[in-house]
Length: 438
Image (cartoon, rainbow, N blue to C red; front, side, top):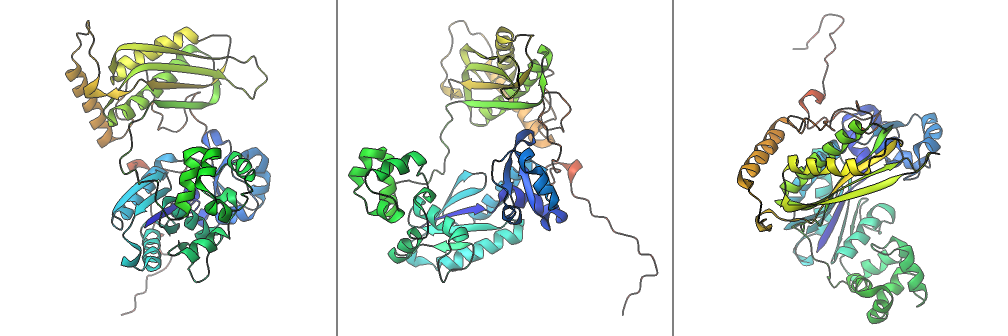
């Protein structure tokens, strides 16, 4: 059996854990630069707020109801994710972290446990230990566990508690399929729905009962696997080890437009620093560096978008070398007559650090570079990501102080990862004598 556990309104729930005022009011979380609504608490959704709606379109309506608004605080959310996963690992044979708020859990056979009781217990433990409410769906395959998770919150089965859904037999699966729409199934897109309609498949039950070979003719092998998964035959294994990345990208939309080259160079150096850190975590090296810049596509200005790629003679994980190459790329595409709204860095041609091809004229001491970068990463691990960096870079973790930094006017403190932002408890001094019963 496989369980899918996800946090309910995850970003908003994380904010409400530490902000008691937000816990009593509708709460929304905005995207980068406070642009769109990306998360909303249950009571905020009840007011009619839609996901990914621009904030300026719903701001007046939300403020009338006293809604609490937060800028995205990904440091806080990532730490909550780590705490949730550590709990999951105690209750499952294996765990696949699917997204920041979702995880697949590999469980034992169906008849080994009372899975409803197990799910209720896990859900209660997670909420007690972290303050985050979750939904748990259990099924024989990944797709059925996704279906069960959907039903646990939106279409609960009779006899099962709220927030939990276990599809333990064919009758339960059939009942769940009858409570959802075709578009609610995991992996079924609008295009897939239109193609399936050609075969007369318009409901989840019809999709499950369709001929897998005919479905494959329309949707390929992925569609055929969906049919088998809905029938209880596992086709998708848990990915407990993440595959190596094909490339690593770090980019930002700026809080304000930036026009001078020095500002852009600082932003690009900062992006390289963040991307190179991710590169070393996976013991990878990059062969190519791409830098791109673009103007504000929503503004009535002359548009300019450009990118430049440079290939290194030997793949590198050295932040200093990657920054030099990225700065060179920026100089080739920068035009002073434009004001830029976004920039980014893409590291490509990734190879395992130990397997990179040496260069005939390369005389650098790669072992020394590896030690230097290792010391740099170790200091950051102990003292924080802003403890040490290249002089050309800027600490993205600080509150916005640069033109190119993200706008986050309503970001909450990073309660769990910064000493200077820990929650503070204040004890009010009693006004009169303190009486104690003995």
